[in-house]
Amino acid sequence: MDTIAPAWLWAVFVISVLVALFVDFVVLRKQGAHTVSVKEALNWSLIWVALSFLFNGLFWWAVQQDHGTAMANTKAMEFLTGYLIEKSLAVDNIFVFLMIFTYFAVPPAYQKRVLMIGIIGAIVLRTVMILVGSWLIAHFHWVLYVFGAFLILTGIKMWWAAGQEPDLESNPALKLLRRVLPVSKGFDGERFFTVENGKRIATPLLLVIALVGLTDVIFAVDSIPAIFAITMDPFIVLTSNIFAILGLRAMYFLLAAVAEKFHLLSYGLAVILVFIGTKMMLIDIYKIPVAVSLGVVVAILAATMALSLRTAPKIKHAAQPDEAA
Image 1 (tube, rainbow, N blue to C red):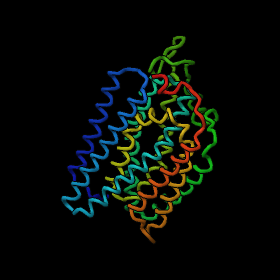
Image 2 (cartoon, one colour):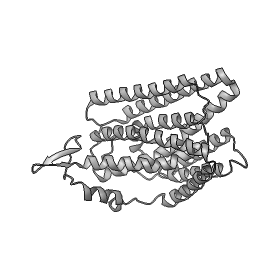
Image 3 (spheres, helix red, strand yellow):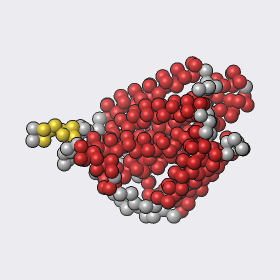
Image 4 (cartoon, rainbow, N blue to C red):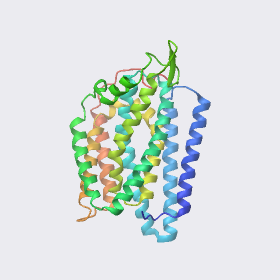
């Protein structure tokens, strides 16, 4: 698995992620169970985005020192495009999280811990999947065509399902969990297990954690191949993916309050997946420049968000995270 990144930059990346998670956990522990306001979510979102851009700047400098400015510009743009794609697809992920929290009536004060644990699991899972995917592509070039076809089919499926109300009650994973685990009727703070009638049983929060983890597995299968269409460098694929994931918790609380305003976003994400899948299918015939890919992704997102805001339904006031703050 060849990469243009020097060894010391790998070390910087790992240390940066560990420090970021440590700080987040320390803040989480000091704050305890509390509702995250929109202002707090916005501040944290800006911090995560700033850290991502700062790291990309350091990556540009490292590549520029060894390979020149032109190569540095290309690689930094690949990171930015991959980061933007991951952030975009994470929005759809967030809407599913919102549905899960609403279905189980998870108090906003408890959602923060669930998301934090979900992010840790996502980082580990995606790291493994990206390394395995890089190895497969390096040894079996035809895997790219499989990824491309899968993205196109996923995009078509996402377009077809957009606007439809998901039915969590009929979810087979939820039915299986309920069959295997006895679950208490109510929450016991932030605990995943409680005691009822002298027996130790799971709380609904444990089911929420399991469904959040399962959701991330499903979305990782969609999103990781999309970045491989932008670059084959495992360093760029991994770092852009992880930095996008690190800000997922803050982005959830930021978007949860305005989810209905972006009701057309799923259509835009579907078009992006079809475009990226097509790009991957054409890789041996014509390589679409990274700048073009970045422009297409930005244009689709901007157009979809603008149309969503113009046609947004009136939002009824409900107990969303920002209103409970």
